[in-house]
Image 1 (cartoon, rainbow, N blue to C red):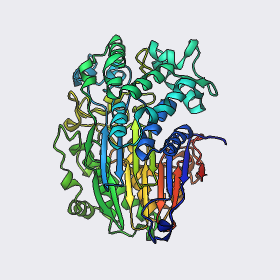
Image 2 (image 1 turned 45 degrees about the vertical axis):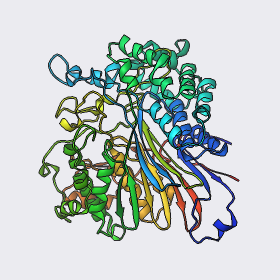
Image 3 (image 1 turned 90 degrees about the vertical axis):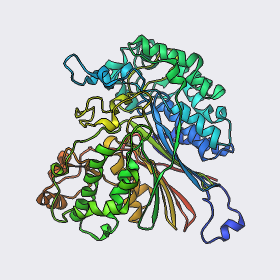
Image 4 (image 1 turned 180 degrees about the vertical axis):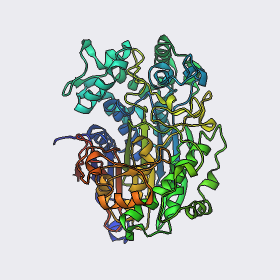
Length: 573
């Protein structure tokens, strides 16, 4: 069997005669996992075959992605997970977002002229927040899993210890950030062993990371946030000029929050609350679009209305959203159908609304280098999990002896009001750093449920995460299956800059002209702008699984965009 980076696996278990006789089965016929790397998907399936549930599998998938995708996520980062416990019927949002160290006041990120210093906010010790992912793995395993943590972490430990073949995207990405990463002896020891940078097809071993994972497996929270690992993390950060403390690590806590719920057509949507901005934005956009028959509209008219809903949701994101433990978020108002009706009434069906007429400024958004996985098990438990270290390889800093590549999530705070961050976007007081505060995120893990289907979806993609999930929901609503949803062409508008971005094939040449006539500015790939569809300007890595209750089938979709992320389906009887 040839493994590729993007993989969907289905494990089909035999149905009982009672289940076969039911018109609408009570449970899926097996388990399904879609993730961004074959080794991670296989780790999850192996754990389910050992008697684990979706939550044990999620721990295995997450930890394995932390080993094989350091570009995107890892123990030095954080995540936002949406869980559905089939036995109780309960949905819960688990917030493992990083937190701000007490030392990271806004003034620490300014240069001598009072300007934001991107070098400090995006690279090295000051850019890193206190990691949340290890605590999340422990929390989910202990509260929701069936298996001991050491069993669920075993696949990741083995891969870190024994190694895996370096894929070309990993080697190429290291070259992009090598000038930063080579500054730090701990990072060089991992990514340039014996003075030679990792190359495609090399066997990539990470013994220090394996040892850190083993301590986590043996000791749980204490194994990472206290004791030898914690001391090495603090010493490594502080040796490079940062100011972490052992008390900050020991004081980290996972938060459980109530998800956002709303209806769109026949679907019940369950999605991410703050500190994610995604759920509120989805509720606004979909409730604005609710009365329209988008599938029956001409393309230009449909794109116009979807873009206008995006524009309004992203504008509200700027002013109102932040860590709900620190700021008052008017969630009930922003997600109400009446508020959406008011926004809808401001849309001219024939003309673009200039973003300058919607007063305000843009806001910080999640980094491109994120990852997502989706899981359904045979009991009906579900996991939609998005995790990240923010920018490419995060801060670039590995504290010596830990193998842990730290995030650079501090750049997601509004470090200087009205000043662009790494993505050219800005924020204000609701998202300013304070000790222990979580930075605003765009990660949007989501469930969809109708009488006929259950779907789990999410994606990386920077400021485009929310709009990609929106288009995925609209795709399912239009009758597409999981793989078709994962492959949908994408377009995006985030209020400011006032422009529609689009992938090749997302908007036809005819619709492009019509949208321009309405007053929309479009930023299209060169080939598409000339009427072609051959550009490689694509984004995201949407991973989704679907249970079709009518046929009692499990379907999966892995994003085909990456050269090494071609969808593959395996059925194990």
